[in-house]
Amino acid sequence: MPESRVSITPEIIKQSKTLTCDCGGMIFHTGMIFKKISQFLSPTGKEELFPMEVIICDKCGKVPTEFNTHKIIPEELLAKPFVEPTVRSTGIAGSIGGFTA
Ligand SMILES: [Zn+2]
Image 1 (spheres, protein in one colour):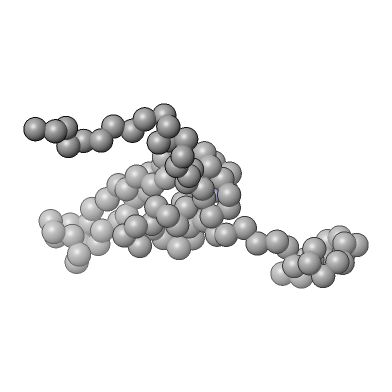
Image 2: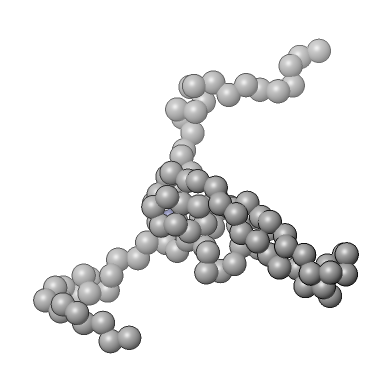
């Protein structure tokens, strides 16, 4: 019977692309978030804390959308694609402290 599990060789790794965060970051660490399951939704009938491990980008501190497979990561934790500041594209470089909000 042939071995069903294919082993990953250094050559395969070399040819594979590295997962990047939406911001371009490539180094990640894990963190925990806790969901408070209300007594109305909880199977035990009591409020429960549900721990969830999340992958966090070292560069932007957010969760890459690639890891949001079940679409359950809170929106505010998700990484956003890097967008060039609009000031740059218009060519106006001299507006220092131009934040209005
Ligand atoms: Zn990132």
